[in-house]
Length: 190
Length: 190
Image 1 (cartoon, rainbow over the protein chains, first blue to last red):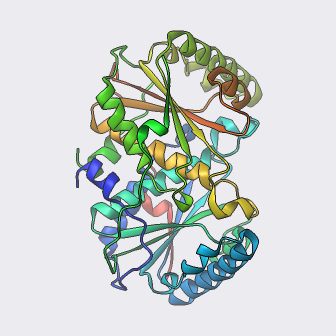
Image 2 (cartoon, rainbow over the protein chains, first blue to last red):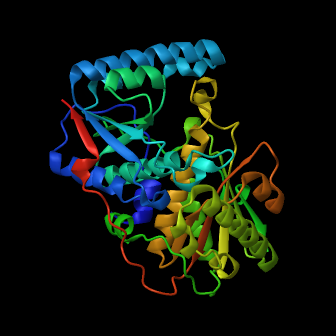
Image 3 (cartoon, rainbow over the protein chains, first blue to last red):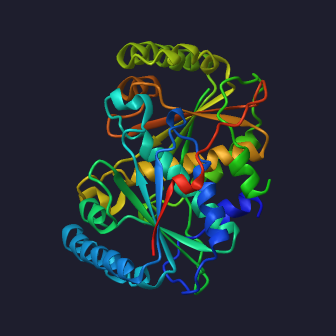
């Protein structure tokens, strides 16, 4: 798929078919993730590929608990319509784990120690695009408590579970989400 | 350009030609950035396009100060070879500014308040890929003090200057940086 078509055609999906994903496709998608840039090429990401029904069920429970907590905390009633049942049936969840030790020079900077997270986010974006190019849809899911997710996935305290990327074929067409015009987002210093 | 070719062919560049970048290309590159996903579609990014020689000079001075400080702080002698003179001559520097208010539900979470940064990083990755597809090279540059960069760019305290994306045509061929094999980065929970 052409790059700009992939960038503009990618959608966030919350309704997946249960068809499993062939290993070769999964390999290609995750390998694309590893081509993201990172501080001092530290490659601070790890991918946990979850297909276990029992573990998906635990991720769902944590996300649902977090959703109800967030509704109460924020008062954002629209969260009510964002059910997270798809976490139980999506064929693959890829947990992206970051390593704060692999953050480069910003470990010494004020407002720093985030470079590794940015690199992981770039890897996640590559994963989204690669999946889309191969005909899959994705969701960048972060509604979970990091401590609890570490327990569910067996991730040590010193590593950071940054996101769950849900991955499968979309069960229905997904409308485009509106974008602000570029001129609202750009300033020039000439 | 085909998506996987763009993802795998992108390089971090530290040696740019001074040729200016046509507005139409710059528009296409930054627009690609705005197609990144973000929490509750908040689009938490702002791009400052810097072509002013005087401002590039100030960014260089700050980066060079930071480089020398980092060498002393880290003892990483290899930082000595990473001169940052290219900041003075690269045709365009795009400062990417994040808005912590546009971070979604994670504003209430422990180890949270970073969703907006992840979205901005995804936007930056789109910018890298789009630039590469149009024949340009880029560098994701973060060696600066955020407080000082806010002053240089006139960014209010409550916004976060996350990165300077250097953008121009590469002056020389850039070798590929090695990647760890995927199997070293993946674990399965089946």
